Image 1 (cartoon, chains in turn cyan, red):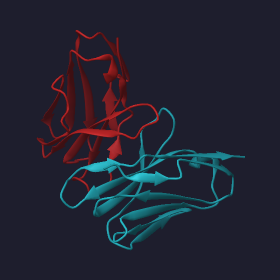
Image 2 (cartoon, one colour; image 1 turned 90 degrees about the vertical axis):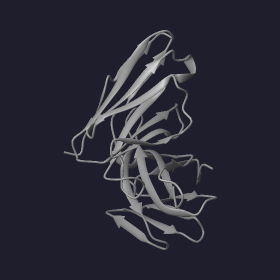
Image 3 (cartoon, chains in turn brown, purple; image 1 turned 60 degrees about the vertical axis):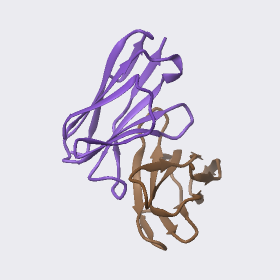
Length: 110
Length: 113
């Protein structure tokens, strides 16, 4: 039961905002967010552990609604360096493994 | 040091070959992972080692054999692979499982001919 991300792809101009959603059919304990640039390894962005928790640093933040089994990643005032594929990774109560979502490809143009 | 290293970066092997992928971390992390990633797809978990013991095997074919010689090293032994096994193989580590961020190595690009 792979988490589903939406949208599948986003095209932005520098300075625009974007929201990426991650939805799971399973009860979640944790949600991770990673960014992967083409030909590179995924890079950790943030982890959310509690229902209703919101986190952020700089212009990237995220929220986690445990009851709805959903998380959202918010990118504000996007920069060229934000381009890449974003994956959520979800952890459930009865397993120790992280399951990655379907991915969202984000492209930022000047 | 937040680096996970993997060797080799690229590997081409025939279906009858035996090869190994290596992964190393010196962050004192107790969980290590192998993932397989196909183009434009998310990483798929293969194996998890926790405190040097295999804790998760995601029904991976026996032609993939993991090994954790010590807390810093993780190997993936390959034998009699199929062309569909061609992919990027990523190693990752974390302080413990699930609730902690995972640090990924650069991956090994494997091509099976």
